[in-house]
Figure 1: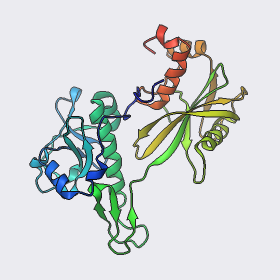
Figure 2: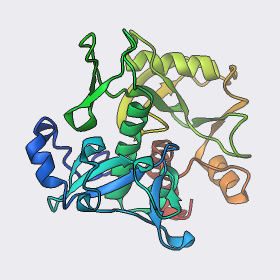
Figure 3: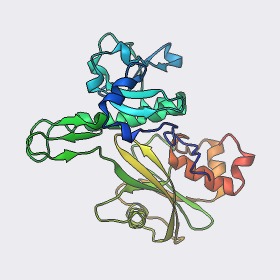
Figure 4: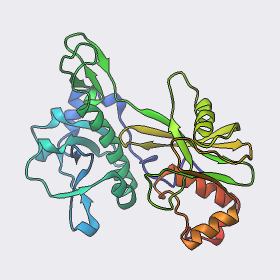
Amino acid sequence: MNPDRPGYAFGRAGADRCDGLRSDPDAIRALWPDGRVILIDPHGAAVAQGPESSLDLYLPRGRELPDLLAEASLLGRDADGAAWFALPSERVGHLPEGRIDLRGAASGLPSLQAGLLAYGRALLHWQRHNRHCGRCGAPLSLLRAGHQATCPACRSDFYPRTDPAVIVLVSDGERILLGRQASWPPRRYSVLAGFVEPGEQLEETVEREVMEEAGLRVLHSHYVASQPWPFPSALMIGFTALAEPAEPTCGDELEDARWFDVETLMAEIARGDLLLSPRISIARYLIDDWLRQRGALASNPNV
């Protein structure tokens, strides 16, 4: 497993976020004319162009939107030094009709564009849902290239929110535990996950979620990797955990939870009786790595 080069979406997109430029309006103004602008609609999809079967991001340059720099958010610069910005699509008229949602971007766009779209989507979601001060109710003003909101009335400052959640591959040493929610597509199983609560260590979240969802006691856990998951603002923090080999007992969130050894898992996948999480997710990364360590993927590359 190499979390420095993740096999899932949105990780290490290859852009410098340029924190030092966010408070430098002259530098941002100089980057704007040649900058690429990702236009994101209120539903979080990016404006796209081209045939439906092969949509590409519609990326106007800043010079084509000369009056909108003040409403744009700087995302950073790519390896070639080009600047990237995010802008609400409703501020621009006469746009192409195509749209790419984030899941489509994860599988269909270059990693740089998919990662920057994920970043821009989360940032604009925060801006759109935090227009007024949470303390006094006054309208907020955006600063630092869209990364800070300040209240001119009471001087309170606000920053983009990220919601941490653990996602954990549970094993008893020989088998892994997979569960499914009733709302998922038929036959879909995945690893367990849940949000971190206030005042809680990540390891405590792992232990609590596994007990709540499957009734199993975790003996120990280890951090593996993380994945931004802006639906709308989660950060998935990946763990592996060793649990007691008891029979799982489902809580309110799962309709089923089962132990799978390698042979059973591969056989059910081959028969079409079980579907794993999409490859864009860290959930699939954790499962694939467990299989890879046991030589299963090498002999079954299409899993």
